[in-house]
Figure (cartoon, rainbow, N blue to C red):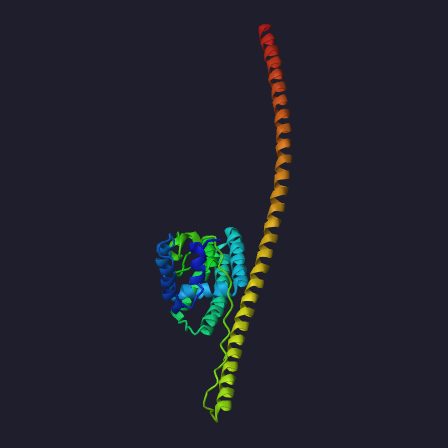
Length: 294
C-alpha cells in the first residue's frame, strides 16, 4: 500500500519537537519527483503547546477519548441548564482539563521538555475547546495539531488552520510508547567511584520517577473524581428530564379530555340555543295574536 500524506504526517508529528524539521525535510527530499514532495515540505512545525497535546493524544488515547465523550455528554446536557448550572458546569470542566493538562506536562517532562505556565494555559485551552466543540475534538484526536485551539462555544473556530492538513479531521493518531533509556555505557578505564555514582544516579532517577508517578496519580484521581461527579450530574439531569416528560404526557392526556368535554359542551349549548330561539318564536307569535284581540 502506498503512503499517503496523512501516513507521513502521523510519523513526523510523533517525533520529538527538535527532530521534526530535519525529519520533514529529509522525507520531502526522499520523495522528490513525486506528488507528495511538495505537501510534505510544507508541513508546519507544531507549536510547543500543540506538540504537548499531540504527545498526550498518542500516549494516552483512551483517556483522551474519555474526555471527548464527557465533553459530548456535557454539550447535550447544557442545553436545558440555567445560568447557575452552566457556571457550575464550566467550573467542573475547568477542573477536568486542568488535571489532564498536569498529566500532559508530566509526559513532556519525561521527554526532556519543560512546559511553562503560558504554554500550559494553551494546552488547557485546547483541551477545553475539544470538550466544547465537536470539530475541535476531532482536531485534537488527530494528533496533527500545529497550533493551539480556543473557543467559547459561540464563536466559529478555524480548525483547519490549526491542523497539519485539513484532511486530518476524522483521522486518529497512532498510539506510541515512551522509549526506554539506553543502558549506560561502561567506561574503558575503571572508575573507583563508579558504583557510588551509579547508585546515586539510579536513586535520583528513582526519586524523579516516584515524584512523577505521585503527580500523575494525583492528577488521575482528581480527573476520575471529576468524571464521576459529572456522570452523577448527568444522571440527575436525565431523571429530571424523564420527570418533565411524564408531567407533559399527563398534561397532554388532560388536554385531550378537556377538549372532548368542550366539544360536548358546545353541542349542548348549540342545542339549547336552538330551543331558546324556537321558544322565543312561539312566544312572539302568541304575543302578536294577543295584541290583535285587543
